[in-house]
Every structure is written in structure tokens, then in C-alpha cells.
Image (cartoon, rainbow, N blue to C red; front, top):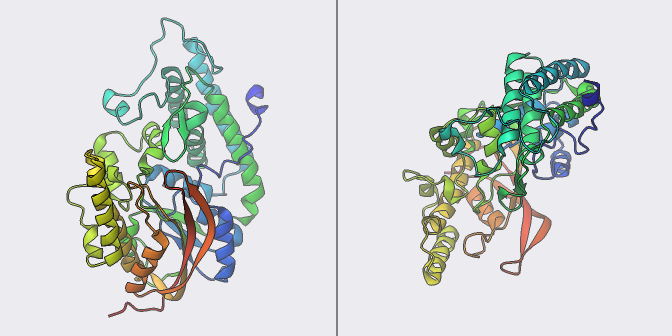
Length: 425
């Protein structure tokens, strides 16, 4: 146990579970909207909880909506500052000792090994479940250690600490233990034959305990993350209950957000078979072709939108001109329509939960992922929101990035809206 406690905690802090939009934007727009403890902030695309964490620090009550279960676990846990830090470390230490003893009984060390003893049968996933992962996402020996640790976690379950302990495992899985790398899209990087699992998990728990000591005094401000589809906000949030929105929806591109958290989702048991994965994807705005289904009809919400129709036609014309015939490429133009139609559904549903005068900030970005056809996301969403009854206050530029494929400057912006209090006729 002493060796585990001597591990340095991760410098980045446990609450930065995955990359997300910059926390300073939440603070900037919360101040700009003059939010305080008497108001309620919503993030309908809350991901792993950046908005909720920053709102709680500011003393602003908040609620988030998230369709991906492991992301929702991260968001809800990151705003639960109630666990006793010393109690969390003590309980996690018991779990670590149990996991190490189970490994030792098989002749396996938590420290990286060249190979396990020849007579050890390594634990593994079922063939059906393993197929859900990117090939070589995690090597057999680290996977065995993860499954042993997970058994110890479940065997020593304590509701006071369980979510934090499970989130710590999710945090170390992708790159510390697994073989994933993250760029524009998730992929497999250098394959590690083995990795420390228990000690890395314990180090993350220690980092959590340090954060809890710093943040526990701010625990009174309510914050929660609930499951739901952002296109049907009014099914999950009470009418006339939200004073402000600060959020970053998905961008219209070929990034599959479900792949970003696939390893964690599978190993934590949130996805066990392909139907679970499909059910999760059906709850998301259609931002990429891997999430498009035959009976999707969100595009009906933007019939007659001249700019969306122009972009979709340009994408399809370019596909034909380039001779691109893959199934994914054939769906690029449809995915574009479904994305903006889904956002139109979102704005229509959202109006039912907003209070008159509510102000909104959407962090969005230009895209050219579909055969280099430029999509000015912020401008198009502004027009869609205006048709849904919102007033457009501004489109604030907060940074640009250079697209090497097109040599264009892509804008990342904050679309600022106001809800006047009634849908337009």
C-alpha cells in the first residue's frame, strides 16, 4: 500500500477526463449573462461536464443532458464533491490490495511484464463484446489486469465512493493502459504489451482526493447530469425552468463521438452488444455517417433551407466528380441535412424549457470534413435558431484553426442567442 500511496498524482487533474471546449468560455459567458445562484444553467450537450463543473465553482445551479452513458458518469461524478477524501483513499486502498492479491495468486505483477506465466489463463471479453472495440485497443495482459480490478471494485462496492472509483478506471483506460491515441479521430497508437493498471488507477484516485479537498467547501450548489437526447430537451427538463444555456454541440463532421469513449464504455459494462451501441447512437444528433440509420428523418426539419440544400448538393456533386463510391461517402450529403435538422429539432424543443429572456451560448466551428466543402456552422445555426423564434445577439469569434487540406481558415465561434419567450407563428 505504501508504494501505491507514493505514486505521483496525474498533473492534469482527474476532472479533465477528456478534452472538451475551454472552461474559460463557460466562465466568460456566465459572467456576461450575469448568472448567479438564483438562476439555472443548462448544458444540453454536456459531455463530460465542463459547463457543470465551472457553474458549480461559480455557485450557479446547473443541469446537463447527455446521451452517452460513460460521459454522463464522468459529468455527474465530477460535480459530486461530497465524498470524504480520506475515506475515498482508504477504500480505494482496500480495493487495490485485493486486486494485487488476485494478480499475485496468478503469478502476475502489476508492474509491466514481458509476458505472463505460461500456465495462466488470462481473462478476456466475450467474442461478441470484443468485436465492439477497435482492434488492438488494449493488449491481452493489461485487459486481464483491468478485469481483475473491476471484479475487486464490484466486490467491494461502497455507494459513497463507487462512482469516483469507476471514473478513475475510465480515466486511465484509453492511453495509460490501452493503446489508443487521439487526434482528429481516435485510433490505435503504439501497442503496449503490458502496463501498470492498479497503481495508475490508484494515482488517479489520489488526484481525485486532492481535488475533493479543494472543492468540497463549494458543495452546496446543485448540479446534475441526466440521460437524454438533446433533440427532445422538453422530455427531460421541466417547462419554463432554465435561465441560460452554455454548450458545445457536436460539429457536422466525420468524427464518431461514440468511438472516442468506446473502450471505457465496453470495459465498464455500458455497452455489451451491438444493439447497445446502436441504441446509444440513436440518441445523438447525427453528426457523422457512422450514426446514420435508414429511418432517420431529422432532415424534414430543414426542408426548404436554401443554404443547407446548397451545401448538401455541393457535397454530392463533388463526390460524383471525384468518383467516391464508398457507403460512407454516399451518405455525406444526407448526414449534413440530418445534422442541421437535428439541431432545428433541438432549438424547437429547447424553447419549451426556457424562461423569457433566457440567453444562450453555443460553441461551434466551421467544418470542411465532407470532401472539403466548407460548412459555416455558426452562420447556418444562427439562421435556423432565428426561424425557431430566437434572437441572434452575436456570433463571437474565439479562435481560428488552419485546415491543411483546403488551406482555409476555419472559424470557431460562440453563437449568442436570446429567447424572447414565445415561438414565432
